[in-house]
Length: 359
Image (cartoon, rainbow, N blue to C red; front, top):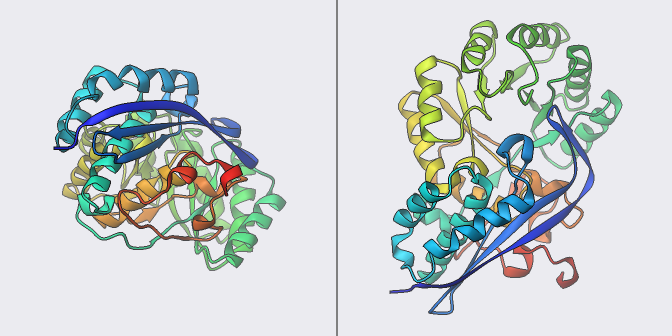
């Protein structure tokens, strides 16, 4: 029986190639954390979390402290008890969602490596290639068009456009992307920036401009589930709940209120096991699922891709955080394909800590 011998937690910074602006703010660097689980058999697992203060409520320092505070619950425990350990950890350290995702990933990565199986197998599937969209942040229409052209040339056929500011500017950006990539599926993410009325105005104007909009994500503030439901009632396109859903209980509330057609599942909000539970709730209610990400690097993205391959339940995949980094690993080059392997999530320690000097 393999047991956890030692757990370490360290901050991990990723330099972004360009500033990334959404309605909640601008990021120039991903200030993440990396967790390493060492076992008495010599097996080592790694996990990464990406705290985003406007979304997760955590700073990097707080996330590191949270992850470290939970290590005493795990040291000496059996890897085989991973479900109970994750449950106990989340009960003991509530709120530190990205920190707990990093710890949970390291734990499950070690468990799978100890058994020489890919992480996807834990969720019922083989480590097949996953195809992602790419995101255009809040930039000028010209810059948005340039990014969309580059994305289409690289093979992306699904582009997410960030919005949630002044509706006219959001419309101009979205139209520019659609014109530059006419064959791409276009979705829009307001990151809580609109009212139901503003969302309806936006959809009317982009539709009038000839954009075939596939989906609007989180148009209203995360805690206003009634507002989200009103937006869904007003919009002629599917509405996705993102920041509104962190837990299975949140997903149940969205279903109960009829607030969304799609739930955006992010491991940085719910963790792996929580994500699987949210998918079960969504599927039972005939809602579609999206798999999104924060600003994770290779480890976090590979972990999410393994969940996608394992469950086979996601209608939309938005796993492009690593494409924003200066040091994007060669195994995840600029393009829509995410090729994954095992054992565990398949990312080697140098890539897990994004040590550019070793590549």
